[in-house]
Length: 213
Length: 263
Image 1 (cartoon, one colour):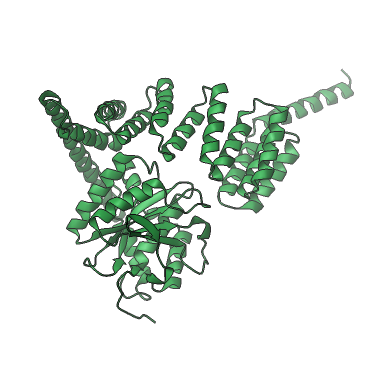
Image 2 (image 1 turned 180 degrees about the vertical axis):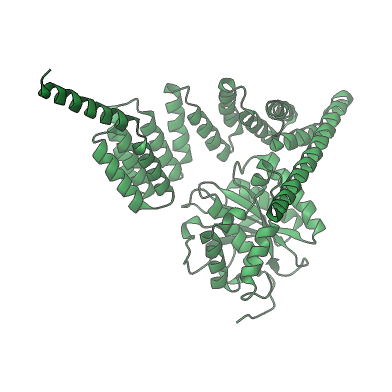
């Protein structure tokens, strides 16, 4: 049963598409730290609706050139597709430590300069399993120049069980290898870092469950 | 010759052939590789089976002991794994694999500072170990100690002057360090990486970005600015060409496969 409610100020909604792609990105490179950007196609102001994500890197996250290049390219693409960058996600290689690294804080700070209620999302590798009852994510928000833990009750992930099942299904069928991050795009520039094919597959799996992927 | 002698000769020949075949057969290497892959996929049942076969075949082998240690690491029994490696090192202090596994345990536990210290001590003795130098550069990058990461990459470039990846990584570290001098060095090493492999897209983008930053810097004179604008323009041209060529060829492949279906 789908339901709609207006998001209040300070709340963050994470769409099925964004969550599944982040999860698959972390699964595709289990030995590496991975990161990416969170996007929104909703207008600015009020609550944050994360509708999509762009997986960026799986090697040398702290190094500047490729990160700067990726941020510029995603910025341009967002302007063309009426989206905006509203956050940053990262999954650390070391599963026992899901705290934001200095490079995560730096990039999140940069995003917060352009977007008031930007979010920083850390994927908790230790809690990633197919039948985990709650999403394995920890969210931070910016308060007085510091990133503090966001109240769990202000984070919305509709149809969590269906979303979790879609992610497991894609993992089992091997379709997670369709995911292309910016690093993979630089290795072979014919691969599409906007992941249109994977987006379509996820939309297909999600359509009976979710009304608004 | 008596029949006994002929029989003995034939039996000896038979056993010799079997031994030679056995030694040539790579099945035990496959057991080792399957075991390591099973550990990667959290298939402890399969890893255990492979380990038992290897133990049976090579009792007392240090290499098999190391595999047993890796299995303990995969089960996060780090203290037991460490004891296993210590026992290997007691018998053979020059066993580099066991020493590197001990450093991997520190890395898995998130003890980067200790891992860096141990790896530095290891490299004082085994200065030619390129895998170790690369690992050390990665650890320094994660600690944001770019100066020391650059030093490790310099060691790698000295021993592998034709490896475009080391040049490109060194250039990225220099770019990250920042400052005009480092930017100029970064541009030179991106260019060197391109000279070694003109399809390295990271190096091409890196050349464009470093040249643009130098050209935009207020500290450079007009000649340097002009030269860097030229380099950036060249890089842009190459990037555009690369995208056009690759997209054209991928479209061609798509059409070929469609037409092959029609045949």
